[in-house]
Length: 157
Image 1 (cartoon, helix red, strand yellow):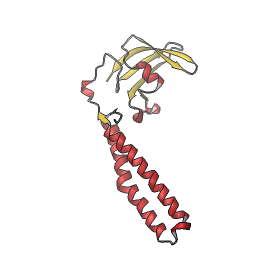
Image 2 (spheres, helix red, strand yellow):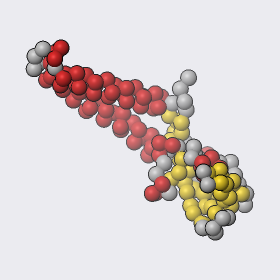
Image 3 (cartoon, one colour):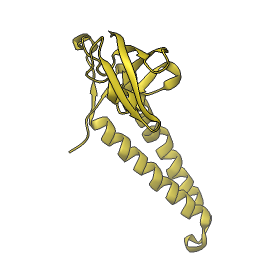
Image 4 (cartoon, one colour):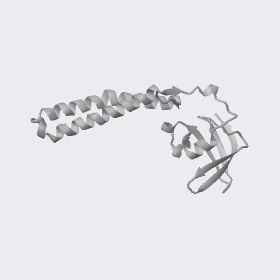
């Protein structure tokens, strides 16, 4: 059974584009490299041929992995999201009760996480701690330094 993961329309398009790039551009390049190396003579002592075959094998592995991820990908219907609880695609404003800092994060699938743009994975320690919480609740997040406490200030879509 494949793992199901949820994506925004943007994230799903990015995954599909990467898969198409590997299949339509990188795969023919790998085949061409093998053909060129094969034309250079004795295959038993041809390191270039061996390297090209290994690169093709790694590329095929990557394609297979992405196809498996894509097969389990589901598009999130943003109009159906409940804003009473922190869920995937929720923009959550939190206050760190240890130091008083306020932060806003958007909870996203692991493949779309980007801390620089304020997107954290629902599989990260903070993401897991925030999931299912409502405004006013305290999320306790276990980190290597101990436990962080975050108050949920607001939840938006």
